[in-house]
Image 1 (cartoon, chains in turn yellow, orange):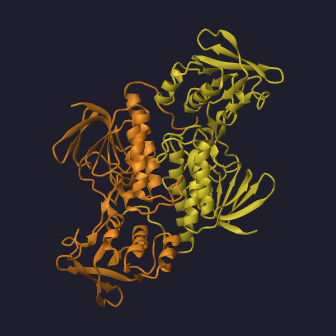
Image 2 (image 1 turned 180 degrees about the vertical axis):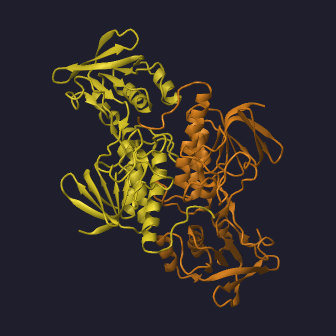
Image 3 (image 1 turned 30 degrees about the horizontal axis):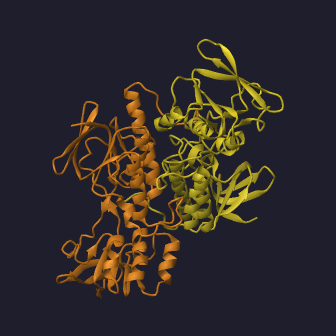
Length: 315
Length: 315
């Protein structure tokens, strides 16, 4: 088994950027990921990635991927089940048993969608219930959907739904949206989006496919059934840190704690992007962090061999 | 005098990204800067800005600028000479006496080029001595130039020089380059670049224009005169913090200390990009930080008015 200079776990904005930086430093680099593009893929229109006035998330991630491959990054699809440090090196074992070794590891695998935890949700997943509007909204052409959530993901799902669906219910437990005011304005202007505020979902109903969503008013506790064909759960994400918790510190949100150089508490183990305690969760922020993690991994390997490092300041 | 929600000092990658984020939150935003594009402008080819496989620095910054203006950012050209906090607001006074007020300020004005401090350098500035290869190298078509430095800026200047000039001397005080190995390889392959290692510049000579550069071998102390028409000083940058030092903490490199939310020690005053202690100095890192600073400024203003803030985590 060959030993890579760097294994990057995660193929989203953070991981792909880290790989661009490690490859430009000629470090042999393997990206292990369950997908290519991560959370950015879930956004239909990105208007706030500097340098692109309007681009879809999947298109932007395709460009990151192409750039990384141009510099010679290797890729393997899979989920890392175990990460061990032995001496100065690391071994990453995938769920299928394949194992890869590296001198340094960068954790960049982001988050997984949070679920509502209500009756019917899991049962109808893939049969009307979705956590990816970008992927699945086109399946609901001229149909009725409910979108659950109050942040940018939910708002963007509603905007997308307004283009495809006969009717969109946007269900939010508060009376105000957390998302960008410009996106809120767009949705208010859409004639086929009905905002249902101060309401929480309590059950997904159907037969073979989803037929209805039951919601409850948070103040009156009154329940009502909305006839829908689809339910989009857009209420955020959680971290999965079980396989690394012996090597890193976590905060109360279960995010991996890093310093300003993207170092974890284990030498040679770095982290970047949404899986860390970096504030806000944005493609450009994850990419910036990926660059830092890539350069820090390079400096770590250079120091191991007594070679010159990249300066961190202008001194 | 109107009061802006946010004044951003600096129009490079960090400042422009911050303005994209504040404008998308509908905050009235003024960017004050001595130029548009900052340090990124000085790079001829950027291959490591994720999403663009190869683009010139000025072109990338033009895209940032266009994106920021599309969202309604206002711009004024000028140098901020004084920044004062009065109550919860700030007043920024330019060198020409114009003053602007804001509820929050983001410092994003980067660095200024470091000088060699040798005889003739200042005298011949603009008459053969330059600190911007991207701007000035084309003026030395078929001529001979000396480039001073060992980092990426010097290497990129040498690569650019190899395309225009009859002869390029790359003068570096060490015997190894700090820059990217891929760029070093490109320069080694160029037939018209002569690397002069272990050497320091001691004098720039000429009459109306530069005629020669005197260098000294660091080990033998032997001096020799290289006949050159141009001298590119590419030895890094320094911070200018006199006008803000009463409001922020500085580290030993004279960089503004920030926490992970880009906050300084003064409430309402944020900083991002090369002027801060963020490690490494890269366009993508500055842009990521600009997004954080913009969102943190928004959260600060929302909190002042008791309104909802953008979440910093996935909790």
